[in-house]
Image 1 (tube, rainbow, N blue to C red):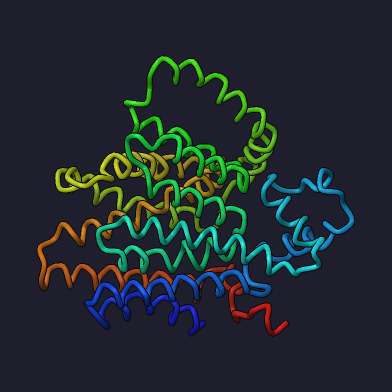
Image 2: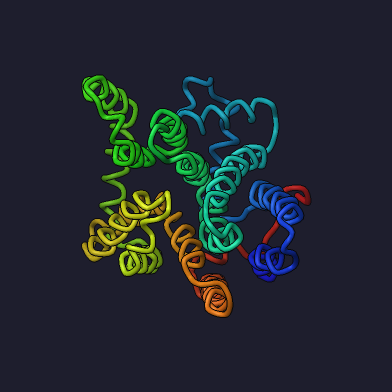
Length: 343
């Protein structure tokens, strides 16, 4: 358990260790590299480990076109690496790299980089990236796309979202974000091309999304869903309380949309049959926490008030990590941490 708290503490330690930006950048890049290895080289860690491991092992008996247990990109990646007789660690390492690059790029766009990164460790990194391999790769591409989310970048943003869809098709819900932010891009040519674009998306995703809808809605409850949705609801409330302060930041429209989605999710989570699908869909809106707390710290005047706020955020997320490791029924799949090199 201790190793997770060490991992969580490092960004804060770096931030307080030095104010030299060059030294900080080197240390943070080194930390991201460590994260890639920590996530990617895990062994028998995460609730879905056995599912991915078995699917990976049997890939050797299939042709590439017949091996379609998962989305196209993840299936192709698994099949290629399995036929190179590499272990499941190779797939995990590749997906970990995508996730960490996306996380780094997204956090670099936030006003207080280290605080955004610290906020990501307890759930985004430790739970999501180590527990949901395909979703983590998709989330990495989503964050990569969000890092360039601004007018004039619709094509680039959509490119990364489509890459995300190839790893987990539920990421398709993020595609509409580009249209919401880039209203200048909405012209006659765009309107005429929308039916073609959505027809292609429907053709690629319809069956699996329908299956996922049936699967998720048949599950009455998703353990811990309320807490996870509530964790996004809090920054959404903070955003609306200080909305005038947030308007001066470039990511205002993004935070507005994410906050609206988080409030809606908090309302819908009380409908039993929607609990699981809301919980899974909200994974892609988790970056709201990173942005709001980082931006809120920037809004506050420098000095004791900002320091108190930063310490409060770090302390609360530390408590969240401790509670999850101590009391979650799934934390046993994370403890003890083991890595592939020793197995």
